[in-house]
Structure formats: C-alpha cells, structure tokens
Length: 102
Length: 323
Length: 103
Image 1: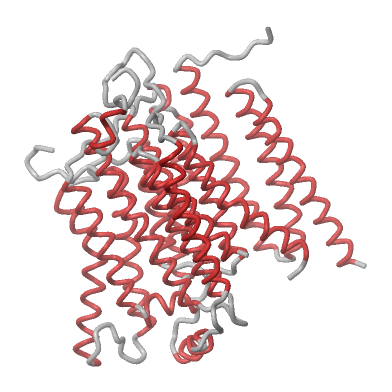
Image 2: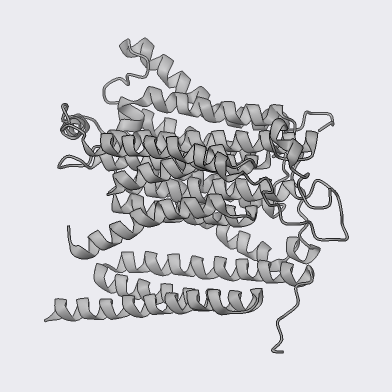
C-alpha cells in the first residue's frame, strides 16, 4: 500500500509542477510587455520546479538526494531572481515603458 | 521501451531539427542565439535519454552555457561598433536575402545527401567488435571504475592530450588577433548592482565546490575533468562579467603559465611513463589512479582558465604597460 | 529514432550554412552541425545490448573541440567587423548594407 501511496503522491506533485510550468509559458506568450512576462516566468517556473522536486524527492527515498534537490531548487530561485532583476533594471533604464491598460 | 518513453524520445528527436531550422532562419540575431541556447538545453535532455550522463553534463555546461555566452558577447559586440551613446544600437539582423533559385539549388543536393546518410545509417551491419565488453573487461582490471573516464584518460589518453592542445591553440589564435574587450553598455545601476554582487558571492563558493566534486567523482560516476573545467570556466565568465576579474585576467606571465599548465603536465606524465614502461602515456602498474587524478586536476584548472580567456579574447598584459 | 534526428539536424544546418550570408549565422550552423553528428554517434553507441563508452568519449572530445573552434571563429568575425565594418564575406558585402543600423 505504501509504495502505491508514494507513487500517487509523487505523480500528483510532478503533474502539479508541470501545470505551473505550462501556466508560466502561457503567460510568457500572452503578456504584453517585458515586465509582466518576467513576472509570470520567474514566479510560475520556480513554483513548478519546487513542486516537481518534491515529487521526485518523495520518489527517491533518500534524505541526501532530497537535500541535494532542495539545494538545486534554491540555486535556481536565486539565479532566476537575479536574472529577472538585471533584465528589468536594464529595460527600465533603457527606456522601455511599462505597459498601461489603454 | 515503454510508451511514455517512446513519446518523450519522439518529441525530443523531432524538436531538435525544428529548433535548428528556427534558430537558423530567425531574422534577428539575438533571437537566433537564444534559440541556439534552447537547442543546447533540449540536446542535453536528449543525451540523458540516450544514456550518456557525462555528455549531458558537458553539453549543458559547455555547449549551451559557454557557447551561448560567447555568441551573445559577439553579437552584442557587433552592434556596438559605432559608438553612439545617446541612442540604443539597432538589433543586428541579417539583411542579405537569397533569391529563391539559389535556395532551390542548395536544397536539392542537401536533400540527396540527407537521404543517403539516413539510408546508410539505417542499414548499418551489426558491430563486428564487441566494444562494450572489451572496455568492461579492461575497466575491471584497471583502477578507474567509470568507463567513459577510463576511456578518456587511460585507453585513449593520447586523444585527450591532443584535445587539450587544440584548446590551448584556440586560445593562442584568439589572442593573436589582438581584440579589445566587448564594452558593456549596461547602465551603471546594473553593473554595480548589489543584487548581482550578492549573487556572485553566493554562487562562487558553490561553483568551486561543485567543480572540484565533479572532478573527483569522475573516476567512479559521471563527471571528470571537462565537466569540472566547464563549471569553473563558467564561474570565470561570471566574474569577468561582473567586473571582479579584469578582461586580461592578470599579469601576462601568470596567465600564459596557467593556460599551458594542463598541456605541460599531461606531456610530462606521458614522457615519464614512457621512460618507466616504454609507451607514451602507458601508465605504470599501480600508479594509474594517482596519475589520472593528477592529470585531471591540472587539466581542470587549465580548461577553466582557457574557457574564460576564450570568452574575453583580450591578450594578457605584458609587464610594464601596453595592452 | 535519434539517428534520423541527427541526420536531419546535420542536413538543416548544411543548407543554412551555404544559404545564409551573415557570418555569425554560419558559425552557429557549423556548431549545430557538429551537435547533429554527436547525436548520430551516440545513437550508434546504443545499438548493442550495452552502451558503448568509446563514442561517448569521442563526443566529449568533440564538444570541447567544437567550442574552441567556435570561439576562434567568433573572434575572427569580430576582427573582420572591426576592420571592414560588416560581418559578411567580401564578395557578398556589395549588395548588403553595413551592419548595425545607422553605420
């Protein structure tokens, strides 16, 4: 029973993570300017990655692997945030106007 | 193979040529480079599916990462030749269109070539020499347990030796062109940003640890000198981009010595083993593990330095001024 | 399946290499052609029961050589651009406007 429960739980988490990735990509395609696209990308993708990591960590059965995955997720979080900050600051200083609802 | 695995493989295999086509026909060069980086990342996934984790590591670090950075640097450098500070430089685009006759004339031979290659590839005879079991036996006798590392540094070590020579040669050729560094037009708020500084401070120790770990783990798991060198080279690139390292990477003699170190150590080990056992790079019994690890250690350092030097393209300063 | 994919990538890039005129695009095409060949090599390595590590080692070497060649080619393109003002080969440069917009 327990292995079936573990499999079901990790499948749920991975699918949820995939859904967040999909949502982030839809945002990338549909949002009107750089800033909103960055917003959807970083938030949704990081959440999606975290959920997928949880699902995989459950599957792996070892605390060490789960910790490594958590560390990898943290690094992705930090680098995503830095990249988004750099892109948006450069865009703002170069004069890209924030989209306003007309 | 399971159905899901088949679907995944099919999707990956299909998306590779499509990405290649889209990347090469994109009008804007920046878009082409970004699509190239995407191609590299999907390729890394394909390597993982093909059962080649070492190549996946190396592709993600070198192929997508470093080559992507090189391309972005060059494309950015192209659009800044005219020093206009008050307007944004135009996106570089490819403006020479070819008439459709030329395109047709090229498509026909390429399609014939592709068809011939596909037919040849699909009708391969069964392998004559059972390579995996040969390598497996030899690995069991030796001391390095990961087969790919064993092949790279024990059985085909001459190839790896020459490969380092090629890397060194590329750096020398780039230096001989005498380019100056690509000037960044990022606004001051970005280059001096505390977020960037904190990020690098967080990242640098982690990257050093991962690089050294990859090097050490390469003897028994996927990893090895090239992956470690690529990770450390990426760290070098990040440090150059944030201004922590000057583009000429320090004093001339030190930089040159650092680049040549990997090649020189490899050569030294080869000559010593020639004197000891009679074959160039035929390691004496019992010393294999130590020698391989020593070679890989210096290799990693040299590869990292060479990759950073290839990124900055600025020749090292001579003592006493003059760039 | 990856065999065909590798061949397809190679063919697409060969076409692009000849047709497009901008040098950086040619460099990207050469790099991707190399990757197509690597996919081919690795797919061949899987033909038997066990994966054959020798093509893996060859592909690793190939990736490093490809990045060295790409770095050198890009440096040459930059030098050409510095010297002549646009990133096309001379005989095609006649009907191409200079690169970079207003230049």
